[in-house]
Each structure stands twice: as structure tokens, then as C-alpha cells.
Image (cartoon, rainbow, N blue to C red; front, side, top):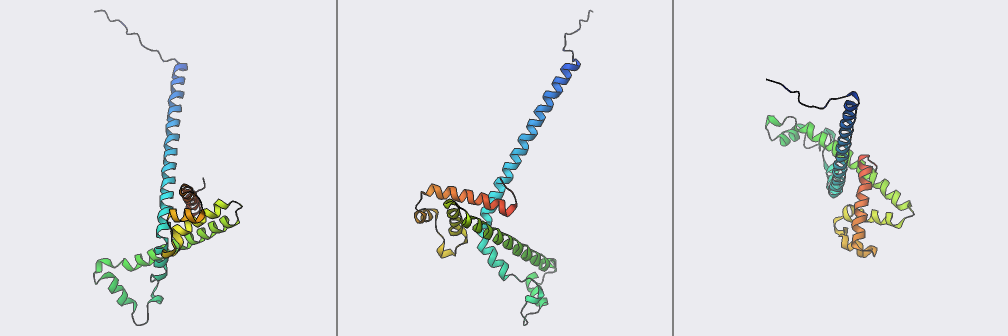
Length: 189
């Protein structure tokens, strides 16, 4: 039996280096693409979270004002032990409820305070801007989320009030949410 050698590719050092560089380049490209994808997803989440925060801001603000923060806030005629019993429903499994409620109330208060400060900052920036669209953007946010319920307006009503096309209001809303997202979450585009 005669064995013939199969013709094969011989990996020379130059060829091996070229293959390694090409593979490394593809790996770097894939990594960069994944990083960009993650950044875009995070940006989308922040945008969504900003909108959600604004939609629920009035309720969060009210909750933070009304929540019992400490024993000192409990009225004299209702002592803390009674309050604890009421909150845990006389079920010992809920012993950790009161500290978690206090922690939640503190978190909500901090969140509301931060959002309020950033909204005030955004308002000041819009008011001092030389661009009329900046003040209009604040008004879009104000009438969409921050005004009292009976004063809130639809995008169509805002467009009529501002004497612009409704598509302009949609664009203003989107841009304002992006700017607020940067203020709320510390991310600048």
C-alpha cells in the first residue's frame, strides 16, 4: 500500500500572523458592536424610566409627603406598637415590614427630591435659553406631567396653544425627555 501525502496548507509564520490579526480584528469588531448595542439598550431604558418617573411623579410626591417616616410622626393617640401590629396584620412573618416601609419611604423621598431639583434646573435652563423651542419644551413637559390634573393638556391642545404642528410637540417631548434623562440619571449624549 502506497500512502500518498495529502496536499495541505502549510501555516507559515506570516500566514499564521495574518490569520491571528484577522481573527483579533473580527473579535474587536464584535465586541464594539456588543458594547454599542448595550449602550443603546441602556439609553432606551433611561428614556423609558424618565417617562415613567414623570408619569408617576405627582403620585410619588404625594406618597413621600404622606408616608410615616419615623415613630415621631405617629400621632400621640396611636402608639408605634399598635401601628406595627396593624402593618404586619398580627402575623410575625412580616416583622421586617416596618423597616422596609421606612426604607422605601426614604428612597421615595430622595427620588422625589432629586427629580424636583432636576426639573427646577431644567426649567431654569429653558427659561434663560435664547431659543424659544427650549421654553416650549419645558411647557410640553409641564402640561403633560407636572400641571395639576385639571390643567394637563393633550399634545394636540399644547400644539394649538403653542400654534405649532402636533409633530413639533412630539419632537419637543422626545428631546425634552432625553435631556431630562441625562439630568435624572447622569448620562449626557
